[in-house]
Length: 207
Image (cartoon, rainbow, N blue to C red; front, side):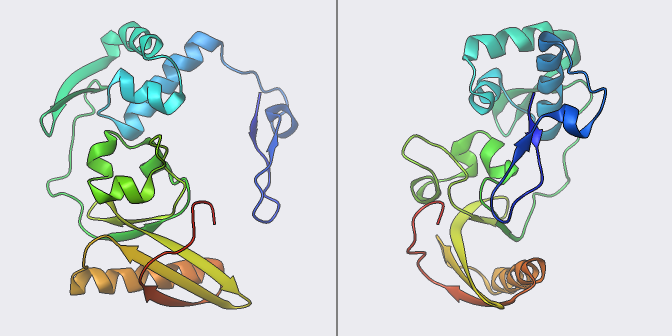
């Protein structure tokens, strides 16, 4: 019924899929939901029905029913001491945890969908980067070793791009070099000359 259309500057647009895909036929509702569970788990698992329900904004009871319907395709696992579900056979994990620094934009899928929130937004990160109701994505975030470790903001003036990064703890020398690389990458994407300031982000969400 709805899909993204072409952006208009910073504005997002939507359109009917039939305008872009002649002959498009949507999948029936129940089958579509089961497909969505499979793809969610493939991208973001291990996860629980409660995680899926929160992401899709549906009653947890409905999510439990969907997981039950797919029981033959799902595999229970324990990840870092917590139970969850994944697709059968999709249990491979990296040999080493992720290390490094990333600058993620507003509403990046990783920080919006990633669960449990307490692990992704530890301690001060939850207070700084989430809304009081726990909504994610309202701030661009600094990712440090795979978890939220700060927020950041950019302000463009002509060809200049002022980037302010507010880490929630002191960065190591290696992390500072990685942050510099990320800032240069943002500048290249924005086709502007970036300048980094490490300090307090004084603007509010969606600024």
